Length: 104
Image (cartoon, rainbow, N blue to C red; front, side, top):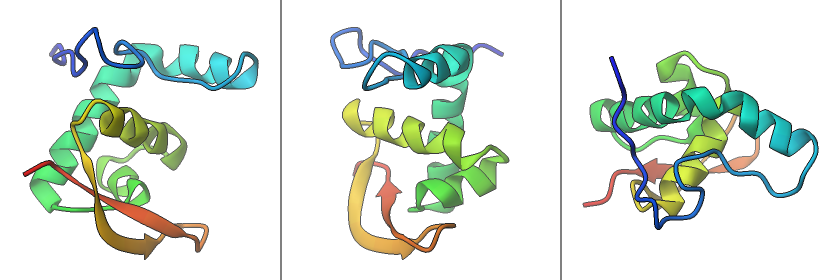
């Protein structure tokens, strides 16, 4: 099943995973680019089904690694597809993490 394109071409990233500098970050973005729309779709589905969650909680629900899901949350935020809540919860490393939700 083909995933719908989640990005407007005028938005940052243009439907591609982002990276800050050339090198390992760019290589990782290129590696995941074939799955980016699928992973973004899984994030949105998880939030629809389970309500507000951290990126780590989303990763657990969809059976993906946190390293695959955390950047997708950043991309979805920039595209206006998800929003931060005022809540914070501890992530797997024990740090305070953003709780994401779908826009109202």
